[in-house]
Amino acid sequence: MKLCRFNDDRLGVVEGDEVRDVTGVLDRLPLFRASFPKHDPVIARLPELMPALAEAARAAPALALSGVTLLSPVGNPGKVVAAPVNYMKHLDEAIADPHTFSAAHARAIQESGLFLKATSSITGMSGGVRLRFPHRRNDHEVELVAVIGRAGSDIAAADALDHVAGYCIGLDMTVRGPEERSFRKSVDSYTVLGPWLVTADEFGSPEDVGLELSVSGEPRQKARTKDLILSVRDLIVFASSFYSLLPGDILMTGTPEGVGPVNPGDIIRASIERIGQIEVAVRNA
Ligand code: MN
Image (cartoon, rainbow, N blue to C red; front, side, top):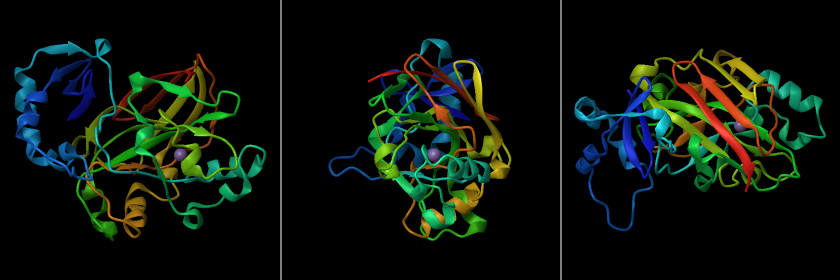
């Protein structure tokens, strides 16, 4: 199943180039008063909601996807976990260009560990990327994103993929420079998620899917997830060895070689097999 959030926080089931509004199913969720949970309540209940979502989709009128505003497919993630340099060839390009990539950051992921991005940086594909520092270098990074479905801590490798609710495309936008990664990558709109969540049952194995990105028609990145240094499975084990993963947590798996700058007016197109494509406009903040 492909699930999206659209317009004024509607929930949709995507079929082909149409979306069915299934927001009414959310009436089944518990109502919260303060304090609110630190996870995403829709993702947490997804397995039990899916039959109702499918049924509601059959009865709902079809809207053209081209006419809706696509938001982040996860509305309330508790954290964004991200993998630094996690493709060998991206490490090579970082080491080869010390003016762009500070030496402290051009290290293998097993040494660097993971980092967190502010959840306030999340946007959907329709929101676009807003460059707050247009005179610095702002890079695109296309990444396969796994959305955690089931909570866990110290998750075993054999169970890791059972903790994934689904997958989407992510852009880990980056201001290049010497500051901490989490600071440079947490600018508002610098975490683009979309176009929708493909549930894990439909997506299948994340071990070898193709991803690519172009900027205003120019091909920039093209790779397969089989070349990840730490696979999705490894990343879940690694992350959960330090902290609990909760439903709705976003896991950005790292970008392959070919990162490069974007400028106001550019259109970023990124696609991942079995998910689809996002089209993201870049402008000044
Ligand atoms: Mn990244």
